[in-house]
Image 1 (cartoon, rainbow, N blue to C red):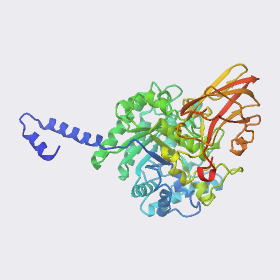
Image 2: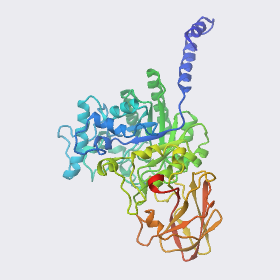
Image 3: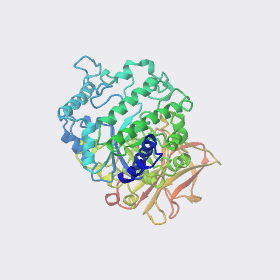
Image 4: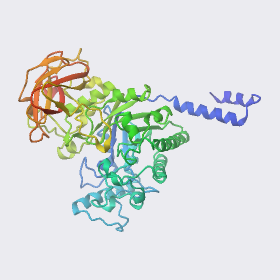
Length: 555
């Protein structure tokens, strides 16, 4: 529609100005909706504190805008499409009308009873925020401006209920958000949901929801370089008491409607489409349990794309196919989160596991959301060196070069990788999981679990395919994979492939060589029948070895 045709409409008898305004508004809305928004993304999500403390480079070096540029540049030029920077949740990293900046002691008027080293860490954040302010910027503006210059899509990510410091008995008052500490009447009072949940802000209160909307509105207005705004409901997934989530979901939906309207209004003023995304639990049922009616949000057009994930330490087998099916909408992109975490108890992911998780996600979903993919070990501690396990086959810290592998199926093809079943041990904040483990195994009982493999196994021919099984005690059993009896064991492989860390006192690790053509694309059925005694299977992994780790990637 051009100006000539609009003028023509004005001259048509009976076309009232009010109707014309509605018509023109619909044209503007349509023009935003018709903008070509790609479905695929490789998102690099940053929590901000790693940049503010300069932990990637030098903790004792005064932070400058140049350091922030270097921080972004380590991600730029890779397969990463989208750079997200956290604003600090309620303890903000910028000068705000509604909140005190993170660790600001207000000229010594706020005291801190932490030990000297911890206090030094808190003071570092405040000092670096002020130093960036002297340069006329903050960590959000500096990083997103640089990301934009480097050709990446830019997002603010806002943590909806961050509980890192919601404990007045252990932490320094410098890190308490003003709204939170001044309004204990809005605390949840429910300790049953997990770490610090007793002091989580309760979204039942309109004042809490309004406070969050004020911060979001402020940030939308403050950062004109953004392409989108992300609402992170996984930091932390606590919003209502006990089982109140489903009943109180309409409160969250109305808040989402208000946020969507504000995002759209800011976008119209700027003449651009500002995307609104969310990060939510890994099942539709789990979302609803937390008060997140994700089906309604999608139906009402309140979100542009969705990321799903578990709370730290993470999820090795994100059930994207189930989520997309249950969502009932084939159009909206759904991404899987790979957290900077590991198995429970904490056991860091290895490069092979990162590749396996990425392949799983790309085969089932639309893209990948890397959460807190830190380079501090690689850059500051290891000085750019790859540090391996004792066997020399495995690396367990993120490196920048992996950002050129994880985002595309083609770049993952022919690379050594490990596919993992969900270990079933990460139900943080009572978020629902989809897992077969731990798997009870008894004599004469066929116990079954599945592992998803993303390779095209008709084209992909690994040198060796290995099944690793961890049990809670010594176990004697028969094993079938996709109905094929498996017998060949390699007792030294668990150590060679660094699969024996994190074991409890009585745990055992077994490795089996799988016959050629035993493994298929998609879900693979693992059948275990104990021939003596009872035991639990606590971990299942399939490793695909394509070649030497120097050329085909570390496990």
